[in-house]
Image (cartoon, rainbow, N blue to C red; front, side, top):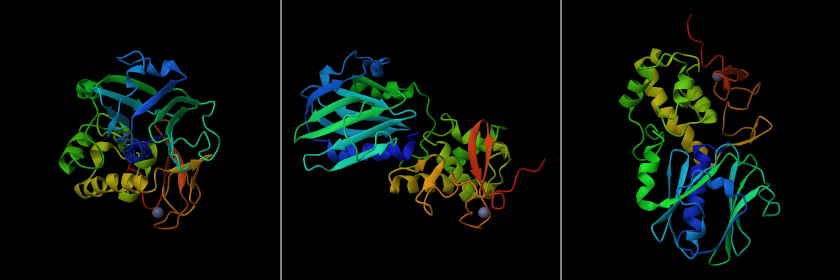
Length: 288
Ligand SMILES: [Zn+2]
């Protein structure tokens, strides 16, 4: 699933390849992606210039001239791919369609042609993603409606005391508290596992049981894991195996591989129904 690092990578691709270009053609092949859109078609984007790309949690916002903004959520399987006139491809998100294969793919639902012979493809094999076209001045209100917690990484990210206070109010496993987008925005399954391993915390520890130094470690580990993901353009996981074999993620999707810290085999458990990876030595279970 595209998580925050994948969406941030898509944001950077839009910023680097589309900003400044004019939209010459809009081909929405799956109109239901607009099912929650304030404006019912994407036609108003024709002839507009792409001005900026920003992100709140896992929502991407592309601001255009004409006072229009295009919001995108990639949900389970969204992929964004930009092809330049020189034949260079910039792709992030879900691994389907094959980034080196033919486009548009049968799962490509939106094609944008831009000046300079640049084409952007939005594909989504599961069709859970959505697009919304709305006036730019309504974007903040639309984002507020999601009631996202503070950002987990970057400028304006959550402070240590705020994180401590939000966890202190919950007795649920710390992993589930961290996955709650109202506690912290943009932290998904892979990066929670990585942050908890880095902090040496078992995912089933009650959120309100963490000692001060454990909170310190967790507060540092959350942006660490997301930044590692952003550095490599997202996590690569195929058939529940992480690649490259000795890279990042370090424990997620690495059952039975050695822990990078202590070499004990990584184990997989379920926490709140979510596949969860941990090192049983570095992350001791909660005391009964
Ligand atoms: Zn270990």
